Amino acid sequence: MPYALFEDDQKLSKEFPTEEEVWAHAEEAGLVDFVAGKTVLEDGYTIQPCQPDDETGIPVPPPGL
Image (cartoon, rainbow, N blue to C red; front, side):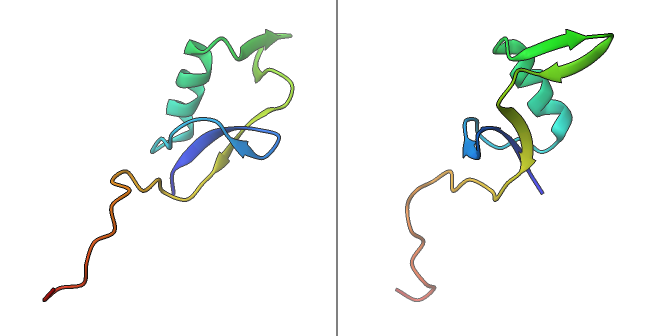
């Protein structure tokens, strides 16, 4: 299952295959803090499993049409 970055249950990023890739994306975006030697997301942000994005946006017709 893919993962994405969320803010208050609203999906902010595209999907990534692993949580580690979402962490890297969040760090690049400046959303990661280091508190007491621990890596955390800024308040309000979470990494959650998500449904795959529909990258094409174009419906695929049934076979035979």
